[in-house]
Image (tube, rainbow, N blue to C red; front, side, top):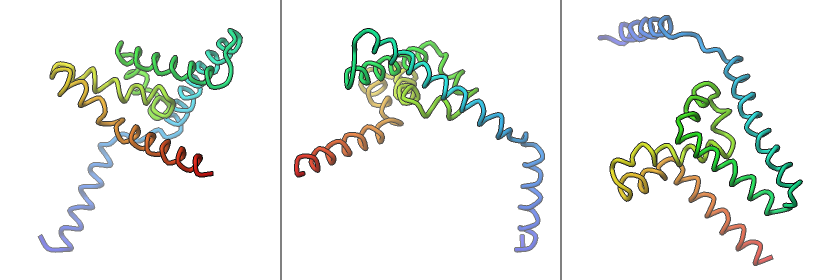
Length: 149
């Protein structure tokens, strides 16, 4: 094909694909993401209030709420509920800490048939590994700066 024919062919192909592709409902998707993300944060806030009422405060309170949300994210992933939430909510289920728990738990469950070492242990950090490395590196860097000051 010559240059002009190739451009026409590409243009026609893109029109054909655009005609088959259903239109994206941006407003509906944003609203669902906002609603589900807000609901997850509200659940975390509920646990915060309950634990604060029980006597926790400061770092212990923040850690306990984080642990509860991570546990719930892992539990819902294991039960297959979090995937359905994610299909409906999109980024609203990925952004909170429960999304991080899901990103670690999903590959661990999916590859468990390959064994504990090459399946679960190796695959569970494929998505979350970079985040963990960045978090550890940032923590070390901030710790060094804090010690120097």
